[in-house]
Length: 313
Ligand code: GAL
Image (tube, rainbow, N blue to C red; front, side):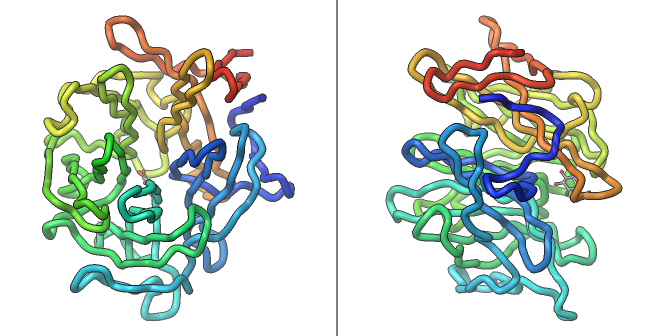
């Protein structure tokens, strides 16, 4: 199946696909793609696919009128501003918690006027593509929390977010139900101003990709790796060119097939003038024997979910 980068992607109804800053979750033979949908009263939309190319729209899973229910004291449950306008929901990520049977979404929350709330927000649902129940926003341990991601390692889940006005990266281990933070596991990249974190595990090593902090303008992606996740990450190494081929990380997709496992960098090619003209780019990752990694920039490639093979065309 052909992945064509930097073009306008549409769903199986021919409508533009709205899933920026997103995340993917595989449930059986179906992938669910969650991402930002900034139209009308929408925040997060969900699409489903079995081949990672044909995406069927499933639901506007988070909206201004989503049901809200507190799951911790003093969380802010507002999904609209006082004047009725929208707040800002960015970088939604979803994992499935086997113990509770719930799909758990974490995201970055701002008040819709400025970027000073710097809060994390949580929502849950019984199904991958149902109406998520919003559980409110909060500042973990009172800290700022902006660009974020979720990562599952066995039965544990971690929420990572840019803190201290983006200067440092925090990694929080979540409590068993994944609805609150259990502890600050690691505080790393002191003063490095990294955004758009995206993690993947390969052969016992954890890799984290991130961008620098230049708003919608693309910059140099860097990665770091560790064998012990809870130690956090250290030295940053450049990967890709100085604009990451005009993109910013959203997440890393792992495609486990019958012949091989492919790892794909999924990025947003933002249009800073017109958000709705933003595109998606997917680039296969190439890992060398010494553990270093390369982003294979290409205009198109063939992705076979059965075998797991990526073939650059
Ligand atoms: C980027 C960030 C995006 C969005 C944007 C707004 O740096 O990664 O998610 O917040 O800034 O300017």
